[in-house]
Amino acid sequence: VEVIWGWGKERKQRIKKVKELIKTGQKFDFLYSESSTYPTMLTEPHHLPTYPLLDFSFFRFCKKHKIPIGLFYRDVYWNSKEVMRFNIFKQCYSIIFHVLDVLLYNKLLDKLFLPSVKMRKHIPFLRKSLPITTLFPGSELVDSVSKFNNKFLYVGSINPQLYDVSEMLNAFGETGVELYLCCRDSEWELFKEYYKNLLSPNISIIHITKEHIKEVYKKIAYTIIYLEPKVYREFAMPF
Image (cartoon, rainbow, N blue to C red; front, side, top):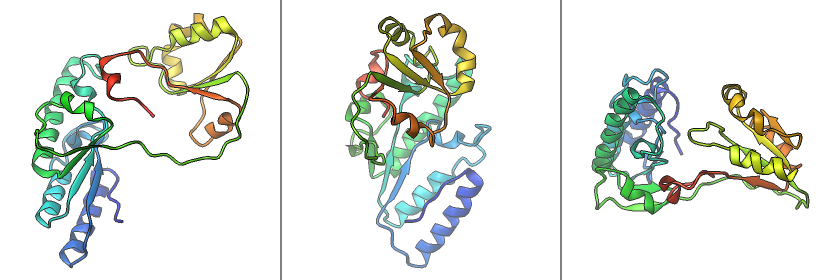
């Protein structure tokens, strides 16, 4: 397995290495790629297309050498009226490049992987004949001792636009059942005024890293995914 990762400069160096391997006779069974939540051409920190054809020219090179290409397309928020991730100008700017992604996928991919086949109809300009397969999320398995307690954990965003947890906090405040709410400290600072009247002694707000969350898992019996029922959630859910 040869892994191509990093910002544009690093990917360019790694792509060059793999191209040399292919030219000298190294055989590869396939190329697997995962899309960013941003358009491929705007994945640099400044979100300007400074490496516009880097990835797709490599796809074309692999296709020329008869290496099958599959790509996991993780979300289609850009085509959802329910989610506005940017202001209107940035939204329009990014949509142009998202559409370019899809048009290039049509020409270069042998297979497109999606969280759910229902997502297909929400991707505009996608070639009808492009093979689609559901790809389920992967995770490391960790043995855990069953717990019988009333402790719950929510991990994730609390941005009211996308993940309004006010009803959840209200419910736990009424029951007295213990809840750990884990979010980024920067996000809590932004939205704590919105939630402050819903806090109660049984609700603990915590900010810890992925490595330390395992210690919290040992204390609780249940984890929560809490989302409003929207059209987007009919075909894609976080894991």
